[in-house]
Image (cartoon, rainbow, N blue to C red; front, side, top):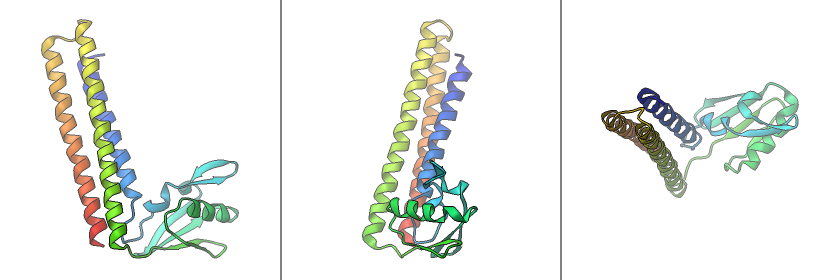
Length: 186
């Protein structure tokens, strides 16, 4: 594995870790309706667990309401069941053609729990980024022992991976801080 492969591999994996964090944060409720709250739900339909966004269009026509319009009206009961089973604190209303979910305002206690969850997700993301750094450093050390990399290249690779680690950790921190601010303001 070359120097570039090690650094680029680490960067790609760190990018994926930040993308996962972005997805997780999108599923955390603020005071406003957001399709991301239910997008990632998996619905047991046609004999398998299918992501909701493959079964219906999800929109937020008002700040306090999510509307789910199934492509196949026969799946509406399964979608409703999945929303209730996810225990998101929502009470879906089914009118036979679409499902409406009213988003109640958040209490201070709930907001604090959501902020704690945001911090947890942020910490998990940073741990993943640090694990990627460790793996990249080990790969570079192995390549140096096998005489594929020189000592200087090993040091450069470690420095570059450390810079990537700092960059992606700060991105994760910024994303979490922005989401915390959203949760506490609304």
